[in-house]
Each structure stands twice: as C-alpha cells, then as structure tokens.
Image 1: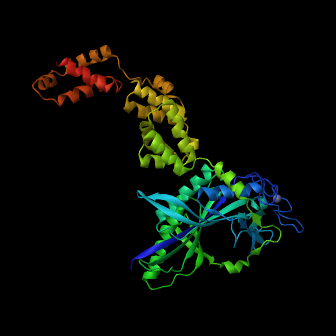
Image 2 (image 1 turned 30 degrees about the vertical axis):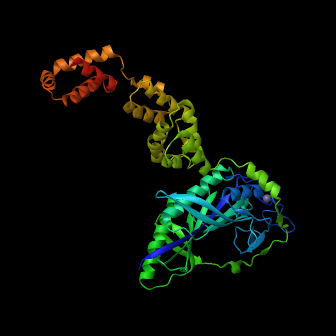
Image 3 (image 1 turned 180 degrees about the horizontal axis):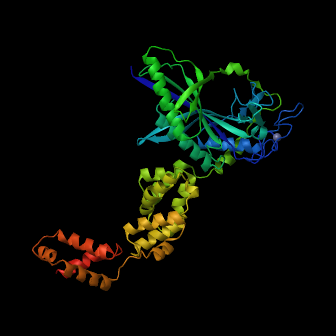
Length: 478
Ligand SMILES: [Zn+2]
C-alpha cells in the first residue's frame, strides 16, 4: 500500500516584548530562578492580569505578514490542567475566538511554490520551567523556575496541508524568517523562543479522510523536526502494513536515539474545559490601529526577494537563499555598497561564505568577515592585485583571523605579480630550461603552451597573473 502523510504544525513563538503578557515582570532569558516574578505571574489569589498592548500589536504584525484576517472581536480563555510549572492551574490562551485566522505562507520546495494555509494565530502565556536534579544524594528532586510563566507567546497553527518532512522544514524556516524580519521574535530554537509540535497521520494515497494522528514534541531544531517526521512516517507505515492500528498519542522525539517514544495519550480539547477568562475583557480591535500597524510593516522576505531579482538581476535561486534571513540579506546589500557587482557577490556569499559558516555551525550574525571587508577583497581581485584562485585562500585566511584582505596579502606575500618585465624574465628562464618543449611547440603542438604557463606559475609560487603569462608567452613565439 502506498501512503500519503498528512502533517500539520503548531509553532510557539516567544514575542520580543520587554515585559510579560499580563504583568510588568521582565522577560529576559537566563536570570536567576524566580527573580522575574510577581503575584500575577505566580498566580497568587486576588491578583488580576492586565493585558500588555505590545503583545497584541506584535501578534497583529505576525497576522498581517501571513495574510491573516484580524478578528474585530476576540477573547482570552482558560485552558485548565494541572502541572507544577503552571501556578494558576490554568493557562491563559485563546480558544473559540482567536485574534487572527485564515492566513497563509508561501514556501519553495524543489523549485515549486506551495501555499501553506494557516488556521489561526492566537496569543497565550508561557508556563514555567522544571529543573530535574537526579544527582542529589537525598534522592531525585525537581525545582520550579517561574521566570518564564507569563512570557508572551503566539501559537501559529497550520492546516494539515503539509505532505513531506521537507515541506515542514521549508515552512518552519520561512515562518521563522518572517517573524525575525518583523522584529517580534528572536527565532532562537535552542532557548525555546521558536518551537514546534507536529501532528502527523498517514492515509492510503487517494483517500480523502484522515488517518489516526500522533503528536510529536521536543524537536528543537529544523533538522530534528525533519528527522522526527521521517522516523514517524516509517514507524506508522510499518504498523499499517502489518494491519495494526495507530494509537492517538503524544510522542517525544529522542534526538540521541533517533526515535520517537510514547509520552502520554493525546488529550482532546474538551479535556481542558476551556472557558472565557472572566478576569480579562474581550478584545475589540480598532481597524484604524490595524491599518497603522500595516503601514509600519518592514519589507518581508517575499518582497525583498522580488526586489533583489528586479534590482540586482540575480537568479530566483540566489534571491531565495539571500533573503532566507534578514541578517544575510543585510550582509549582501552591505557588501554591494563597497563592491557593486551583484552576481559576483552572490556567488561568493553562497559558496565560500556559507560553506565556512556551515562548517563552523555559525550564523551569519557571527561571521568574522564584515561585509565591507568581503567587498574590499573582491575589489582587489578586480584590480588584478590578487587572482581568483588566490582570493579563495585570502578569504579563508580573513575568515580564520578576522583580518582585512590587504593585511593578509601583505603578511603572506600573496601579491599577484602583474609586472610584465618580471614575468618576461621568468618566461625566458623557463623556455631556456625546456628546449625540447619549445621545439615541440614550434612544430605545432599547441598543448605545450599550458605546460609553459604551469612552469611560470610554479616559478612564481602561483603569484603570476595567469592571463598576463599567457599573453606574454604567445608574444614570445610570434
Ligand atoms: Zn509577574
């Protein structure tokens, strides 16, 4: 039997507000445990939540950037469950009336554009964090840190229209880029500011109805999302092929073992006993405010990509990669300010620069070569001060040491020899040392010219300008 996967993703993105969603406590990551807390976010009796307007504004930004409809009237709801990191015994979220619905994000997979529909975007508060200490000699202990309770999140729910792990990964990358272009989320997956759960089921190809789904959690990188989905597709296929049933449940991805394992039976929405939060008034969004926010939106990845293609004349493929993050797009444009050849810069960034970064697992923000310095180096190449081949070594050295091209070239003595009298002298030596080859060339064996060029390059330790060597050699034989 051939199966089709049906994947829907739920993304939780932490908003970059300075204070929490319902109190004035700081949202800063990494503080001493329980220092960013107050009666509201620790759920003390008698305390009342007050909505942070910035949270609503940021959510509207995300909604507009993903073509959602902003609900004129929305409401907060209590999602009831017990867990030690949830001091109130409920999480304030949105349920029946979310702030935004019916949007979409466009992704590109294998050269094809696909639209991923969004069902909704809603606001909610984050829970606290449990720290498990198994090493204590008094036995295992768990500690609760409430610094994260009440940190604002948006949950972005996609329709189950994703068909492959590759599409899932492309969608997440695009969504993360959009939020980062908007400056509303730092996108840090390791610190949990951008996290994703996946619902996945299989069905026989051609069938309309859905199969039984499992929910995957604990995937803290794009790679892990893709691997967990790959694994789950294999696991479910195996079960279905043997005529067994899929159990609806929540499964945790174990990155070290490369498997998903059952965590708990999946709850249904009615298990949470959602009801409108009586402490918070419903939200009536002023359409004028929405229009003001719309007018203030920055250039987003898709627009930027179109502009790069139009203004710089680079291929669609290049523009897609260069606009995959705001920092990379900025790097590209800054480099163009000191060296105005868009395709040359694009080639260098996509091959040399991204390769070095990938090898070091660094982001473009941590690149040791400032854009301006890359531009300077390319300029030196144009002026014939270094050859294209040397430039690669110069760049590697710049990346390794953080030095500028001029410095590297000076220190290493890598200057390209473009002095024709100097090269002429070396050519004479080479020809004198290889009389047989000279004879062969004179008899019409053209290929020997390459041999001479090679000998001259060798004698100059690769520093001679190869074009000049070629020209001068040909002149010799005229
Ligand atoms: Zn607080």
